[in-house]
Length: 507
Image (cartoon, rainbow, N blue to C red; front, side, top):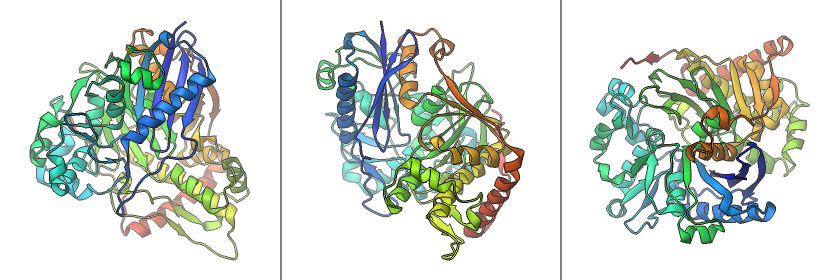
């Protein structure tokens, strides 16, 4: 008997899953804490969390899963880690965290990224990085350099959130090529560190950790970490990936043309390409996928909408703390299009799909004589779906074929209304699977530890539980509602952002 452990380091909570390595079946999973972790906003547009809190919840979740399923920890063949992307963790020479992490939905670095995009040249950035430096991790580090110079001088290494958790487990400072690409620290053309961007920002390459393979032994549990976690010292950490590449991996989305989606705190559609395809306005972004190799490159084209599950969570508090199932049922009593009510779900930091414009969520078309709670709830779910569809249209312009989408049966995809709107407004087939990010990380650890010889073997136990296709009777209604939503968005933006500006850059 062998086990695999997968950790999902989210901004809302930490989840851990225990898999039977032989059958691929999930034996147990827990989430900690039971209430969402706090995101601090010291200034408007900022978003920070304490990395030490992540680690404490990793410890708590590990003890909880041991209590729930009394497994022999010496039989854990490998540990996998997935994590919230684009975060910046700074540590000194003693490995001490220097400041709260600047996380994915923080907007403070937008201006630095825009200046680099112009200064280095848009064509150069798109050909080399497949992205504008935008609001990504490298730009966040530049913000620290300019605004907290004394603290900056104390930095020994920067880390992504998953790098930090692996460091706490193993004492080894390292990252992956996929991780470097998510921070715009990677040059796709040269297949090397993005030295031009580092030079432009005046950042030393020495601040970047050692690079390891995504599927490989990346360190072993130290005696100190093992004692704190209640696991066995020497257990290998064998997989690490950002949440969206890992979500795609957890759904066995690895080859060109395959598409994954998720609707947790943020909403994401992630498509695989073997070509360096970019959007010249950087509304959707390309990163190195988990299974990419120099001979067989695989890039993930990522569309992200920040204001997804967080909008649903906010509404739950506003409407009176009813359950999410009750919210879904109530929303379904309103008609498609919510009788003209439009929700623009852009209230959680700078949205890349809107070119990092400063924006807030908006509820438009509200009539006190027509609309009730059910309309607001429906407009919110449809607004999230329509924002994802807006991004999928941009992906389609780039040549990414978005026809069949896989998703885990979790978060907002648990809502029948959300699924119906997604399928019919996007004209896609949706496959739901009984998996999640933590299970994906555990399967990745199985490949990295050599328990599985291939991805095909790792996903032998993956179960598809539902397939949904568009219904002609609903498509016209949802297309009309999406058209109204899109028209409202263009009014807010002040000009059309749907014009095709997508190029395929051949190396």
